[in-house]
Image (cartoon, rainbow, N blue to C red; front, side, top):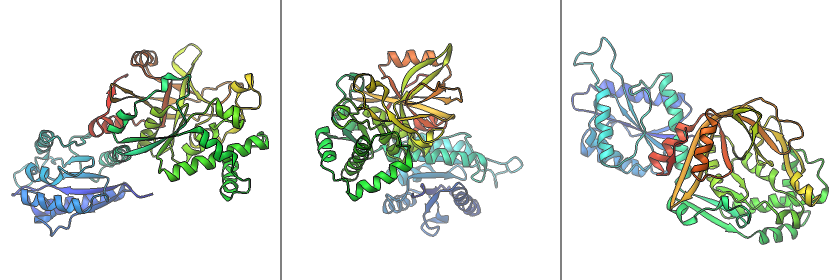
Length: 466
């Protein structure tokens, strides 16, 4: 995968010693490389010291950045001293990506006029002017920081995640495989509202999916390849041959839609027609899609697919959709989060075993093969979900962790015990806020990254449940 790439900007002011810019250029490049990212940087001969002070120099940088559009994911605005804000806003007002404000600290013992930087103060001048021009930017702790420090390395990792979320969410396409499951009004959504945020929905009729599956030859090369892939991914040994073949064929058809329509995420109508017609469930297929980086939700919960995509971009790992399913004894801060099997292997203790779905076994035995049985591994996590409301996209985010607490063996599907601080009050806020019975989960504590991307750059509404 292409490394996250930053465009480097260096500010200047007339009395600034050339060596301070020269050292900043060296240190910032080294900091970016040390953190594992890439960069582009304007030639030092393009302006005085390769930095920007005047409006004319700002125009030079602006035009240079325009020539490199699409090559950078974010901009780092480096302030070695109290820089000129006029050149900065002209240079970056059309950057079109997140902008990280970085300012150098002063050193005790070097506070004379020849050595004092005053970037602590100057940072406010730049952020004030950017606010006046409505150009969004990111500020992180600490207020001033040297590039070659642990603190700035952490800033870079957070900023890279913000850039991934913003770049990935600004414009993308979700495939809706089938109509909303009739019984679930909870998963309704507004396509027109989503389009305002750059999220396009492409809908496909399940009858076409069934037709493609039923007319696929058993010796289709795509099918033979998919059989090997899925058998290496999960344990299919308990699945009858006919049911397994239909699962494999559905996987080929899903891949065909994803490729042909350039889908970035999918949501599936997973019951009850698939069971009555094809005698299987797609649960394990959603798990495999999620594991290879294609967010996939069930029950036509398209909004969950949206937050899964954001979580996976922020964490650079798979995300999953789960039910707020069961209390965990008398512990008011613990809950069993569960679903029938869309959890990626990477989030499980070990690969799952494909079984018959216990719910369908009650009423139509043999119709529900495809449930992925397993357990979610312990990890620090972030939870999020969204809804469309009054033409807006409304999000929530919070944090917790999956514990090593056991889930009894007879419990079917993929589940784990989550510990979430102040859970009961959060549940009340979710209920009063009209959020659904699903939540989505990503690895790591990335709430601050999501909140920054959602509110500063993507203009989502954010409900505070913490």
